Amino acid sequence: MLIKRFMPNEYLPSVLDLDLEHLRENNIKGIITDLDNTLVEWDRPDITTELDDWFFFLREQGFQVTIVSNNSEHRVRSFSEPNGIHFIHSAKKPMGRAFRKATRRMGLKKHEVVVVGDQVLTDVFGGNRAGFYTVLVVPVAQSDGFLTKINRKVERRVMKRLKDRGLIQWEDQQ
Ligand SMILES: [Mg+2]
Image (cartoon, helix red, strand yellow):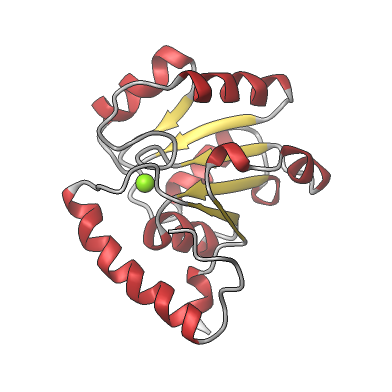
């Protein structure tokens, strides 16, 4: 059923809630994460202290991380580079190419990587379609950029359909 392609494997309040122990038990070694409204608000240029600590902790725990974002090179580079985070900009999600490229660069297989993001239509659908384990998070900010606003409208309809069909078992966190 096509609609299942929009279902994440997990739905969490924030990236910070990723259960690293659980990931490790499932042989996950890498995290591909979206940037805007997943890590920080779409209009915030810099990392937060909390996130900085989280990235440090991830590295310490042996996880690799790559930011895969549809946003421009300027936005993604200026966020990632000062913090030493690998990134792919202009990713064209939900196309799977950037996910595969990030996985290759980390020297991992797709079953060793999770894809995390705040959008059903790009992050979850794209990740699922490319064969990754997907995690949907609640957007950091309530506001969105212009294109995302249009996506959200479609997303609300998809989420409602999943719910109507009883395919969403988790609490509605939005
Ligand atoms: Mg996003």
